[in-house]
Length: 309
Image: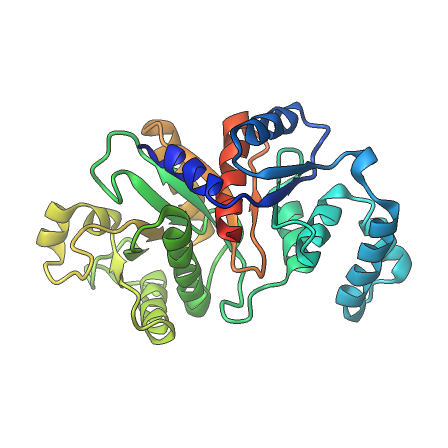
């Protein structure tokens, strides 16, 4: 069974309610029909007729309380909650829904902002980041071709602690969504001292922080990507590697590398890229590329539903 089939099957084991706030997009409407028909999740497809004015006012009051320290007024809060994206996020916060998925007609910063402001950042992780579940066809690497790539969408230039927290939150997602033991590689252009530089030092420091924060996590770095995922190369470049060239969670040193990396694998290897999935928040949600197809929406909903189980 391929990674997409596994994710959809896992979502069906415990049906959750997921909000899709972009009713005006035909792709979203088509995805909602398929999701309901296949029993992947219960879908709330927000259109003007689904916006409860009483709830909207209630959510606006809650949003005002969340944001008043930032200088927002009650009138501002009411205006914000006219946006279905924020209505969906507040539905999720309140427990009226288990998660939300958006981005077909909103930018990643728009979705991330609504998610962080309404759902809140997890106190333990203390940073929101994003990842892609990658399914590489006919691949012996990773977990039979399955990987988590992070961060590919939110944090431009993470410091060592942020990098460590990104590693931990995405390792947890690998276990929850894919049901696999996470093997985490902190990637670099250096493998264990083969090169020097500021970015290399940051990755080395991130490794130590991650090990202190979560001692049982199987994580190593700094590693070049071939030493991280190819056992034969790992044996040559770093025979003592804990990962032995079998990493399935790849943590990129910055957003530029992560974004380029996932798109190269998606386009050149024909990989499925499910996401961006936003992690590090108190409730689950997923972003979408504005160039997404119906299948991308379905799979992001499935991932979000699993995370809510």
